[in-house]
Length: 362
Image (cartoon, rainbow, N blue to C red; front, side):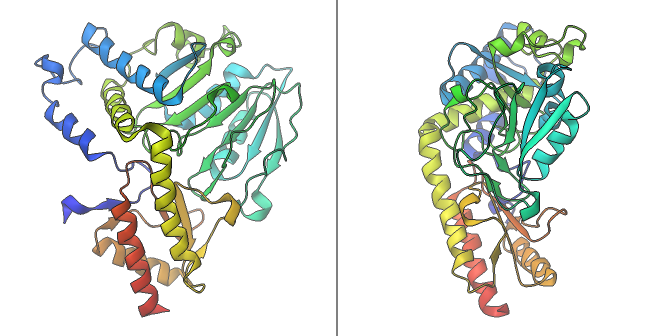
């Protein structure tokens, strides 16, 4: 049974089997070096090749122009909640935040410590079940930047479009939906994403930043918290997470073999369609959390008629080879995270259980 576990966890999440197989085969001897990638020097030419492969994979998949830098950092997306305002928000300026869930709210709360912050949209009154309609948010032309979270893992809401703030740099936390669909990358000034959902293992965060924004970094910041210093040192101002960067490069290669973000989006939409259809056709036994026009393709959140039934469902799912379905403690219920590497067969398995469980308990 252990070989057939479907991991619905919000992260760390499932990785492509092909990537795990290649990593296992190269664990003790990467590229004929006689050493593990965890043993070779990060200053060696071999790791230089591995780092370059990871960066070029990200560049191809996102379609990055030359004036964007790719950084592989540590501290997770949570550290970026502070690094973004530390580097981009001057004391005399105001940053604007769109808050559509738990993580967006946390990011805005962190930013307040470094300067003036204005929330231009909040979905809190709706219980974080909505996102703004395209064109609904009014951004000040003088804002230092506009920040939003494209997909909220806990609340299960997602933007189905790229925000356009004109001349104001858009900063986006894409931790849970990066490379799940194509984006217009030139609409963004800075993108950051924890790796442990769609990019690789935990312990690594990707930052994509437009070069002109590097000049905003104050000189008095510590080097390891300064985007410009990190960019000038090619992500190696200190020893990077070599293992995670290596795996991210393999994941990029796998995704390119699938046909890139456009191809994987079609698979992701089908997985989400099956799950939401099972919810909507259950005669109310399953209740979706997010508003229909804000539903996430990555994190499907729903609940059963009672907390006891939620718990019973999770227990039965685990007995049937499905792990990680318990909803976040902040909202309860059920959460099925179906990132890029999650197979369609796993969603079909869950939908079958949902039908049978509703028949027996409805």
